[in-house]
Length: 153
Image (tube, rainbow, N blue to C red):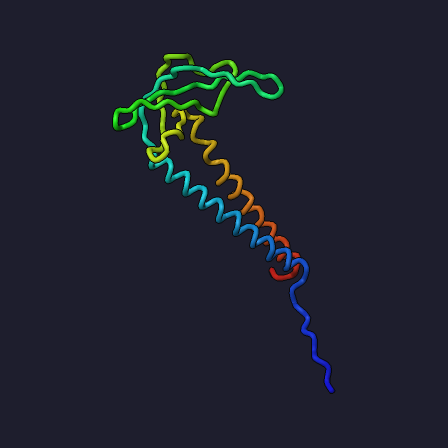
């Protein structure tokens, strides 16, 4: 009676780590591409108009800090007035009541409004940027692990 032969895998621990890192990198890069596509799609869909700050609401944080959140009123394409309290607040208030402000909003969801400024677009790119950076970092780590495993000349 012959014993079955056990095949030994020629994947070293370094190569297994490299493959794991490649899988993680591909996942991260996929998230970056999808999230980036959503940001571009939103940017192309957004409608620009002028609104006015009609009120400032105050919110107190758990540690007692007070932030002022502007309530923006603007007209939709059908002529209806629409008001939205922005989630972003500041202390001191960044805007005054009755101040005119440029706004952009998603026509499919007019409650998603932001004041159009040089600071309003970059936060939308945080997720694609971080996941893209991590994806590239994991690809570099995978290359290093594969090289340590003896695959590169």
